[in-house]
Image 1: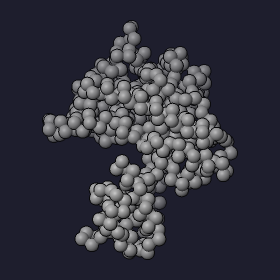
Image 2 (image 1 turned 30 degrees about the vertical axis):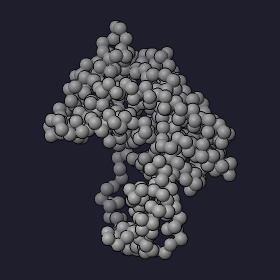
Image 3 (image 1 turned 45 degrees about the vertical axis):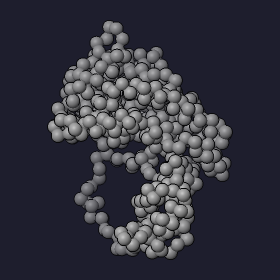
Image 4 (image 1 turned 90 degrees about the vertical axis):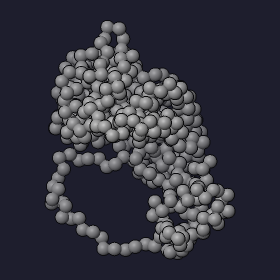
Length: 468
């Protein structure tokens, strides 16, 4: 209710500011409380949002005023062109999924789940206990907290079939988020200038990590059932690559999950080429109609390097992940991580371990599955009702996103801008392709805030599309 009230006040004051001259004083907090029937705390939250967007400025003891436009001589950074020279690799711009918008916007673009889907009570209690414990002041082991490493190994080991040796805690390296892990894996196991195969489309962060590591990305076509193993084998043969990055479970952006048959054939291809499969299991806990099936559970020869993140399912503020790798590959990754960040915050590791070993964690995951199903189905229904020109190749069995195909002639930049002007934030699918896009797509997050507004958001998209 508070978020709705805050958005209503922000929208009302934006309209007021648009008509007011620079320097005009806003109504007092008491007047706004009376006008909107909201609490003083909610009014102050709305004023802070307006201040953060640069529309108003607060003068303590005086009031809040419409910010006056300030002009100044533009700084000259031309000298840096010569000092920096050309970069070794072109780093992509920041993803549209990370941008922020007005508080009252319908946000369908983000890659993170809504706060209502997080185990907030468990996280707050875990952080409080960690603050009182030894981890708040002690330095962590370079590879990570032994108990947390054991938890990651045990979780993956639980999916390991009979006849396959499960991973051990010594095979685990704790990371400050899986994004940094991707960079380390690409640097340590591929090396600058070397080819790395990736599914197309794929996670934009993997494309970014590859550019940062200076590796050469080679796309392999993917689909609702995963990559074609024959296409993958041909790509290995043609490029001489030794690394294939993929998301077998609920891929970002498509939501695709590999069948056991595809997973087995891909693993056979990787083994035959004496190569590595980098398995990004970021959505392990976001199954809806199925459960995650880690490919790494079927490999004990070190061909699969397994990434597992707790950032999206525990809290964006608890940036903790792990890589499970066996043999010299694990040592290479650990050496790179040590050069980059020395070690991961022991405080955050203790909090993450507290959450995932709490009896309430499993209860939370069961509830999460039901909530994600309701949100996904609502967005699918909203698109069918209001965006008839949109097409879904499949309804994802898990994850956070819908991968929506639009007519090929769609101007995605214009569509995105028109929707944003109407208060709806969407993400064009272009940045999820490591090469030229195979069509016009949107990635829409059904785990975002305010699911009751999904039909309104779809209606805006449909109207903007029809105008094209």
